Image 1 (cartoon, rainbow, N blue to C red):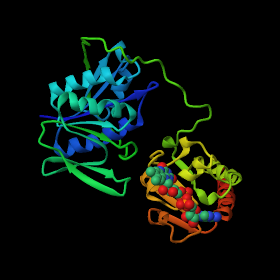
Image 2 (image 1 turned 30 degrees about the horizontal axis):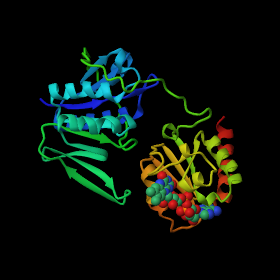
Image 3 (image 1 turned 180 degrees about the horizontal axis):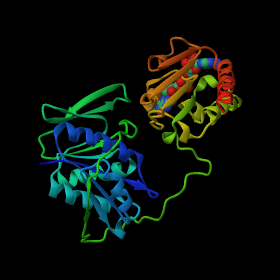
Length: 327
Ligand SMILES: Cc1cc2nc3c(=O)[nH]c(=O)nc-3n(C[C@H](O)[C@H](O)[C@H](O)COP(=O)(O)OP(=O)(O)OC[C@H]3O[C@@H](n4cnc5c(N)ncnc54)[C@H](O)[C@@H]3O)c2cc1C
């Protein structure tokens, strides 16, 4: 029985969020096709990751070696290529992270197998695997099938697949791997911490996102206050970064980050597709815009058509009042 192999990533002693996303998608695809879901994790110390992955996968292949510190693409490629040749999974799935961007094309060439990158959907049709990719700056979604191949490689867009509960108790297998030759032209030196005070908007459950409609940097203060009372963080559209009002790590969208918060408030954001592509996966979207025809309202669950400079202080007051009553 050929299965689905998910390549898990880790950084700074934690599994990457995208690994949970592709694991959840892999679980769904494996269940639909009644296949086995395998996860592979490689590193210098992988026991804790393997236990975690066993919550989703039927089998976890744990490859431990000092050569794997820092999860460099080259040694990992050797391992994954070896496993694909041995197991012949129908699909090998990984997140479209910088690690996968480094490794997947080279792996595809080494094995001579098809690769589809940055996929926003993966599904079965009449027993074949199909993928959807967003093309022409996300103006068009295109569905692709693969050329005849026993096994294919797919990378899934970060933030595109929701994380489902695992609830499994898969088996863990430790795998010995013999690196025949050294590939020492690249060496892991260490991780650089994000700047002090840096915020990872992809991890936030509540995002209060501002656009050009905020008009002036000084108005960010009231937006920060709204984020504070909601227990969230401030993100933004691209013009706000271009004006230098917020750092680029706060930008949501095509050239920024893809986010999936529980609540996304868009304040003075028109809803250009380059922005929407990064936030449409939020569970609840609330838009505040003085233009009733702004495209953001077509993706919003709730909308307020008014001046945000009036609405934001009113919201801060109301939320503070309601919280005061419950505290
Ligand atoms: C290759 C490429 C990549 C891009 N990547 C990104 C990206 O990653 N992220 C991104 O965001 N953009 C990106 N863009 C830019 C994108 O096309 C839009 O220009 C941008 O998203 C618009 O930002 P905005 O909605 O804040 O501003 P605008 O489009 O100018 O909209 C401002 C909105 O605020 C409203 N408004 C004004 N005053 C008020 C007020 N007082 N109260 C309430 N509402 C008010 C207006 O009605 C308007 O709808 C990219 C563009 C290109 C070409």
